[in-house]
Image (cartoon, rainbow, N blue to C red; front, side, top):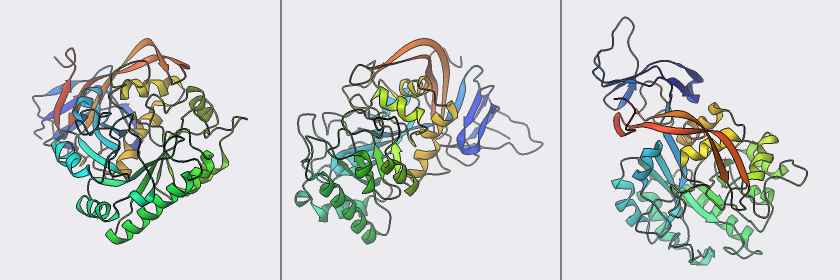
Length: 388
């Protein structure tokens, strides 16, 4: 069988197949393929991944990517060198700007990009310009047209429920209004519209906020450390959070700089509460800048330091986000037939300090260093000293 690439000798971790072993990965055209029995692989491009970990291409589920349309955003393709092969923008665009975002970023990017729509028409324009989530200001007709026009790219709606963003006495009303709009628009277009909620420093308890969310909605910044967190004073998890998880609410760590609390994360993990998704919340003020959320491989290294297993961590950036993006079996997996999105990293043993917004520290001794990133069977990044 003639192949385009064979990746050999690497430790393959693919939670979608419960796979953690040294084995070969075969790639032909844009897909992962299996080698038929009794056939020999013929390939001029054999990649030796000895000493490396081979994984499904990473998915960064919470980012800000409306470059040149928002002052907080980055170019998505700059993340390819960090092992990222697909991403979701978490509401950088609103109804007045989404079409420009689609044309200038989503349609132009090498990696797959999907998005949430901030219901405030202007989206997230600048750190000093705060959205107004008063439901009376929403352009519902335009929102509905955007949802109808972009069924493959738009996952749902975004709202920020934080002190200083929403009035303390209106936060719950604003959140319920967004959920109702998602229900109504979803019925009209015939598909589920998710709601993604920014929860840092919420005016209500974490459990109360989560009570408004439906199965499949996203509780993001679940390890935030400001104000009302998911961890109670005795170290237990808010019962409303436990009930929400049972109900099917998705918990995304969406770290960023100000949206992660080191002690919250440590206590939550100690209580057995793991995130469903690990994402960066990358914006221009922290992109590739230590010691907070420099990039996705640095972030994943932090979760190793906090004691999560590598298999659980990989699932949070592959299989789980792929399902939520409606791409289950197509990306986030190395099963034969899937798109050949592959991330290869080399574990480097080095002391690394991770900080949160309070300057609290987590110290680790492993850094995952990307060596190669492949998207749809094409090498988009290769470290200089890898595969030569």
